[in-house]
Length: 486
Image 1 (spheres, rainbow, N blue to C red):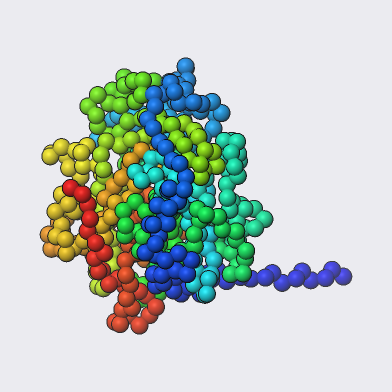
Image 2 (image 1 turned 120 degrees about the horizontal axis):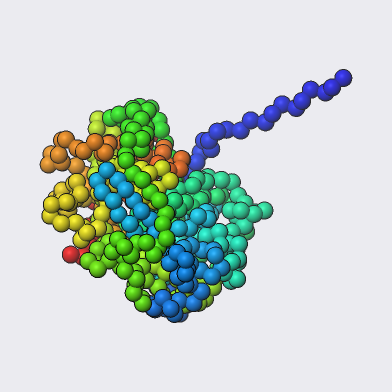
């Protein structure tokens, strides 16, 4: 007689204590491993400990990189890392060609989490990226392309990778593919991960790594160019646990209707995208000189080459191309409460490099220098002229320093008042913060700029709302600061 099959073991769908633990870490604005007040001094110390150098060089001097004879594409001799190609774009409002970065491999952006004294801490790295305006910023525990962690660069192995993709891999808190800049990358995605190890796990700590609480990280997010883009996108993926759904679970618009609206935006946008040889962009005004690919009118961005020295990296010397935008950007989120529930105003943004054509972007996202008085993006001038009392968050952050040179933007969160136009274009919609946070469990919904703003929103102080006896939290909406060099 056949023995009955053993009963299948069932597991909880969610860790019931995770939200409370993360909230405890967020309230802890001082850590046991590195005092928050000393964090920037520690970064400067690490900056001084390693000789860093980034210099512009002509393309002909970029060792390992060359323009392919047949296509004009800028590529590495290994055939790996990435290439600079051309893209032809046609939309209902116009057509254009441009250079774009094609990097089909999926990298790992991973943050290690561990309890110290019952408080979750996160392991961040003081990492040099050649495009960062201050070179060294706090990055994830692991920030590596597939070419890097498979050893194509023939350098040192990536530290701590084994906790994310090896025998020491811990418990998964977050693991989701997310997009990157759709205007400069062609269908680029990275694996955003948070992995927890046991509180008694021995994790060797090297000089460029420190454990920080979530509250400490939130404090540092209020400062210019301290937390890098890759850390911000991973941290944003914790939002579903920082804004847990709890009754009364209400919003201005039901989630099903909002998802239908987004699907409609994707289905009806007339946008055609095709990869083309980089050489063909010359006919559209992108001229290749000895040390730059750029438009004669100086708009948008250019492609340059740099020589890099960074003794703290897996390889200490290398050359590479970088995209250099023509000016600083403005990335803004408009905030408003409906019935006591915080909502944010998002825009269905089409970018040619997105997998799904359209993702949810910030209320405003642009480089103002690229626009004349007659074609300003909606709400840009409203955001820039907002009363300082409405500004809830204001800091300067750099974009991906591994591919973009001095790409910085003013990230700001502005609370709506009576001057906000009542009638908004059809590609704008209000999402509750809980609704937006829930979408971070899935790929291809929320753009990298919107994810940064969600990480910044998470950093604002919280208070328990007495009118809501449920565990749901509300914001105290106290301004952190307002700083932007005019």
